[in-house]
Image 1 (cartoon, rainbow, N blue to C red):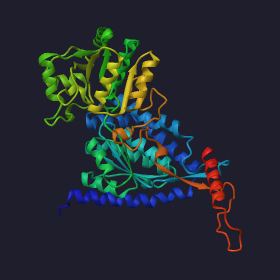
Image 2 (cartoon, rainbow, N blue to C red; image 1 turned 120 degrees about the vertical axis):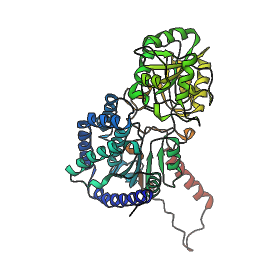
Image 3 (cartoon, helix red, strand yellow; image 1 turned 90 degrees about the vertical axis):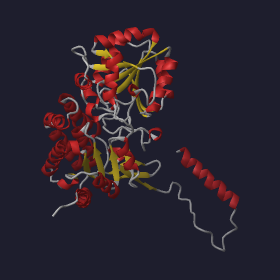
Length: 480
């Protein structure tokens, strides 16, 4: 008998959710110490398998470089562990004796976690870690083109759970992923962590279930005249070529002042940048996008040589980035959009004020609320950018990919980068365990003032006096 795949996927989602809810009762009988030992076991297992999982991801998806995917796996496990290991997430997490308030963490429940094909194994590790750390179960919906490596990652995590005596059903993955099944998963769980394309994130927010989602990245990199140009270009290469540009926080355009533009171009060329012109530029533009203007998935996560071959052009040996000296911003200028591959736009402006506006235009074109990087030694210019740019991460003198996810900066290690309300996200944070539980506040009376109604034999109530007393107490509470 033939079985409809969409119905099978929906049924599987429901079954996994039921099993996860049953497994959640395990967290009722354990405390923070046991949860932390589980997280440590998962970390150790992920670190031990970081390289194998990275190679599996590249082999299955064709995206990126396994060495960089290994680094992502290490960020999602070891670096994340050291960031969250002392975080209180179970039971009483804070007690304010002065204000007489006790704060109790209450887990969200069963979390739906959608996993993209660009960062499949690292995102799976990361979402499992933050979900379990905060006392939740998690069900993964894998991108179909990365189903095998995501499934293997989940099996490694489940084995770590079993070694700790915890139910494996706390973490599970759909083996029959589909749009219908994923929609059912998002509808029936308690919270969604959505990482992926705009359509998927929109579906998460439209599901009726609370969601933590991300927006598209289109990161401008402004090189201001006071910057160390060679250092700035080195860092842009380190970031943009990291896993062949698959990180949504990777630089998409370089903006620089005319007074240093030739120096910036010379450094860019010397380090492996190749400026496309004429027919070669036309040919590359043909393979950059689909007819509807969307990014061409065939070149996502690919290196410069692959793109050149697909476009049918020759480029110098050793070319690391293909660059276009772009003239505008918008639908007719493909280098002004997000390009998760070895392509980058180049813009020249007269001064930092014009550079500030150009960055804003690029962000409005795609990527508003996400991230921006500036290379400068002028603190006043840096401050002006920080005050004015509609981004959640303003990165200074650092590779954007690594800086945004917390490798080269003090930001929280994360593979879900919120874009705030301006970017259509419910948070502007790097999402972590603290976003996956609510806080129940137990609040005691502060002054024992009686609010009981007066008896008939009592003296007449002075309404004005009582009002003044109440307002005075409210004022004291607000000040405290």
